[in-house]
Length: 314
Image 1: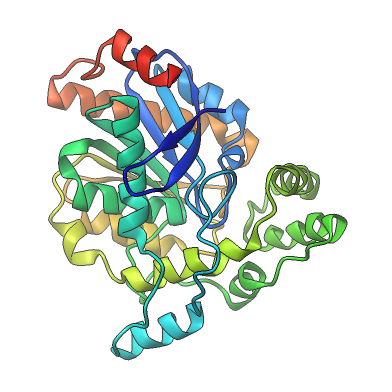
Image 2: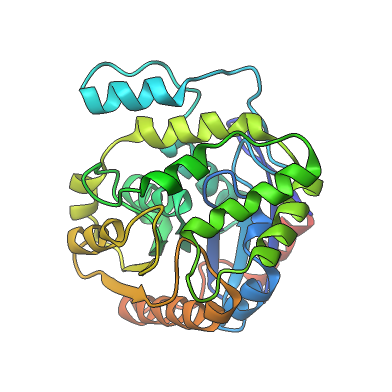
């Protein structure tokens, strides 16, 4: 896969699917998830909506740059944030992760893109829209929240499963992935599907050291409510009714805050994107992009085929 070197020293592993002259959809992964967590069958359905899909590994996960040696206690950041105390230093925040995504667009020669993110990725694309409004044509925030601790709360069992230490033993790591059934779709949750994905992620890059830094970035970034209320970008919020890791109130509140946003609550979806729901999600995202393009009265992309081809050869 290609790799983008950014001016901030971060290198991002990325993958593209579709016609480079179609509107660009930048897909941002969630907490500790590698780009392969956006399954290729799902990406193909997004591309079939007339989108050029760009996926990438966030910093500290997969094959992108690791910030090893920079230690942080997410618990200390969490306690300081919600006690109103000064935060301890953190290696980076969601703003830095959002800037990484914008840097990838620069690398590809893309002026403006449609962005979609799930879970922590939803927080990152919200931050992109807040801090880089000229670069974002539309936002789709999936199973995410606003940073307000009063909404989107996790069930205790789900939070415990999320924060459990990862075993370095491959078989144990794979089997532990089944614990995420607690927040999966009640109808479509599939332990074997989770095991296959866990095996692929382990074999591609096992790097649990990045997890505390990503979690600290979420805690340190705080509440985006005020900034979300000031956004002027087409926003689609998608949330599963079965989500126990970020409750639907997180998505509902996001949609309430962003002027003109649309909310899609999906039955039989948890904190996951199971294959039977890919057509529903792909159609919703594709329709949102087309509506945004029509409202803006702009062409598919502000770049030429030659510019994109040159960037992909780099």
